[in-house]
Length: 158
Image (tube, rainbow, N blue to C red):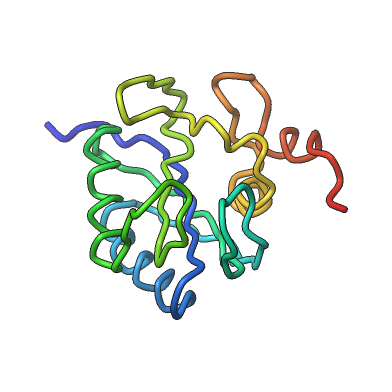
């Protein structure tokens, strides 16, 4: 018997090299893993909270359904990052590809190296804008608010 499919949201970002090609690569690798994959528009954003001078990010979100459990999905995301040349010399370093597991159904997971929902997605416009585009009615299981409501609650950009 097949495992049940769980809806997931994954944020994509790149600020090194040919960003569009990196995100296209990620989509090509995610498409077979996520049933009914839908992808947001990609948006360009300035880096936030980084310790050094970095180029602008290209960000987006994909949603779909998976049979993989959260830890296995995270491992696949990290493998895709590595295949795209992702290095991790220090925290918040510039990256060829960044894939973050944002939501995994209505699950709340707190394990070593895995926290879902992503702990900072509620304050990140670069995640909420594309997520609202493809799944604005999805509900954050921690706050009980929809993605669209979380986005409306953010301070206006300056």
